[in-house]
Image (cartoon, rainbow, N blue to C red; front, top):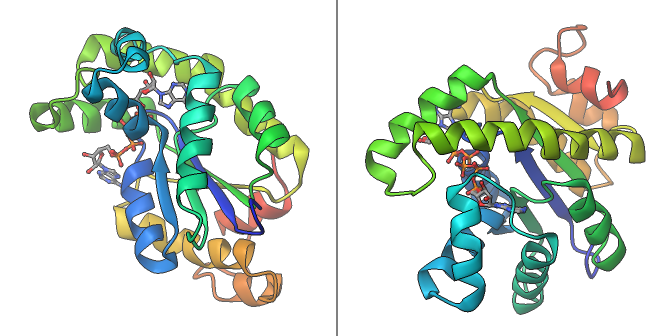
Amino acid sequence: MANNKPIIFVLGGPGCGKGTQCERIVRDFGFLHLSAGDLLRDEVKRKSELGKKCEQLMKDGKLVPAEVTLSLLSKAMKDANNAKGYLIDGFPRALEQAQAFDKTVGRPNLVIFLECPQDVMEKRLLKRGETSGRSDDNLETIMKRFETFQKESLPVIAFYRKLKAGLVLQQSSVPPPDMVYKEMELIIRKAITPVISTRDAYSQCSLWPGPDCPNILNMDNPI
Ligand code: AP5
């Protein structure tokens, strides 16, 4: 925790629904939502030197240098001293980012990994691209973003699984957004409220105690 405040990372492939789920978490937990992509897009809009450097990398579906995202995030966290907690979306996306955050800021209380098949993410992004105005919501860049995710971001999930059992909550983001959120809500509450016992949180899961409850399986037996 940064200053004893909870930190949640929300990770997953391009278009899996990170921003969509973050809206719901913010609504119910009042955390400060920091999207690495939005922070970078703000820099690009500002036409700062940093923004100019990042713009092309983003259009190419590549990651911007680790020190850039880390410094934007650390500053935003410092500026929001009164936040109840931090919900960080789209960071860390590479092992070096995860390691640097661990050293300089702290360890997350929970890492949410939203899992979604590539063809579903592709359809979502192409649909969003009809109106988003985002320079990276086109088929060519989307394919590059998928590649970057597979190569650089998936190892981050493995890193957190190794770091601590139960740290990663793996959740399918294929069902409708409210259903996805409902499956995660109690686990999130448990992760940031140590007084709620594990059993209490699990017993309220709609599928408990069956072996089909994806959250229980993933919390107890991280792959
Ligand atoms: P970023 O902005 O983070 O893009 P992304 O990871 O590709 O994810 P998106 O924001 O496109 O999608 P999302 O998962 O939030 O899904 P959303 O909720 O919007 O990053 C952009 C770029 O910035 C990167 O490529 C990189 O260059 C750079 N960057 C960012 N972070 C970096 C970092 N840490 N280090 C270095 N570089 C970095 O949903 C998508 C669509 O699907 C929406 O239309 C939504 O309505 C719909 N939808 C969502 N959930 C559902 C659902 N359950 N059912 C049906 N539709 C759904």
